[in-house]
Length: 571
Image (cartoon, rainbow, N blue to C red; front, side, top):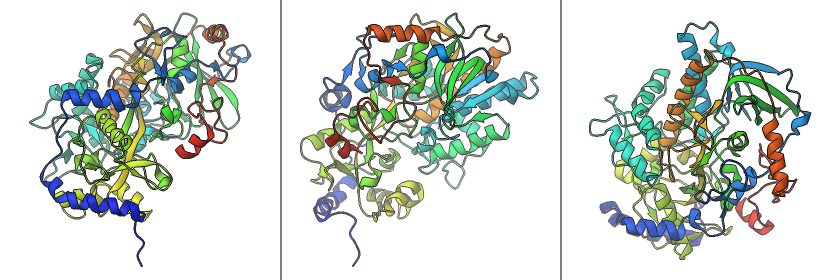
């Protein structure tokens, strides 16, 4: 007897989903009014839950009531450093380079590639000798390779960068930096061409034109994809390009503190060799921070789509040197993280599934939200359904709604889901669930750090006076401004590509004119420690976290965890 994919009580709700499917194939769910969207967000989005945030008391954003941050974020920022600054010998750096890139995901790799090409075009021989990448884990252990759905670019006749700009600003509730968004959307078509020339295999029709699907909050079809492995495919060709240029990189060597030049600028980093537990001192004419986001902080105990090293290190060390932060009061919870089976809870179920026609359906078989609203609206609608008892509970006590994936084959033809969504198909088949025949259970999962370090259009890091911090640059998810309070699908791979490229070019041109930093000091860390003392911050609270420790799960070791009962349910 063939084993059924779900328990009996869950199969009973699937029968209601199947009964309602013919009607839902004919008509889309009603789109909520602006007033209804606002009510959904305020009543159900985690960002609006009372008591979950606080105003920072230390650093450039101290007292900024417009940006209370989640307690988990505040606990990592308002913490003692990992190092004793008086015990670090800065007199003889272990490495001395022109360009130091901290982080080896998409943004860091783009910065390295374009820094190399810019130096080469300026007549520099062996430009790879001027560059060093350091990364916390292995080269490529980053959220970039986990991005599934696609990358946006307005390159169709009926589309335009202006429409892309409006969609992005609207999706971010018009809190984005409009200048950064303008750069994002105008550079987008060039980025697609760049990846194609590197060899990326985008989804196309037989005539060679791009297969482009809609994304939530977008008014046009502009999502370029590589099945549901888009980030992995783009990074495949980008990493090859970096490695083929012999650009050196250090693995298992996270940056744990920036070094000051004594005049408010950056002179390099103190890193930690995870294998030997020895400190590594690196002097650099210019440093680019591309360390990604904070998904592994598990804000409000949500599961996450993020890779193991996503602990906000870049924000922490830049903030201590004087970088201003923005939009960290907003966290993106992807509407559709896997809620069943238990082994993959929190794993990303790409928005592209909804772009291809699958709908979100409650236990009564009702489609309750237009599936391509912006992510924060859809996530709030799912939370509302579950909070009001219309979700489906799993055997372990988790809850979710059905993502009606069989609709994809019904709309586009048999075999489409398996062809377009290879990861989703293979992952669920491993657990006996055929997503082309049965819906899959979904619930919001922590996905993206909307805010971060303030930068200008040249990717220079800004201080509290909105002035560039000398020698310090940043790109990618570690920064804020591009997405405002909510990111649209496909704009993350685009952001790391566009601003990684700008950072690489800007820094390469900068170091050709700049002198090496004459002084290296950790005085700013000493000052930070004095501020921690004044605020009576517990000595056991230290950052950057570097790696989350899932063995002990206490508030001292790992911020988001509240109590053992909750731990066991979340993890």
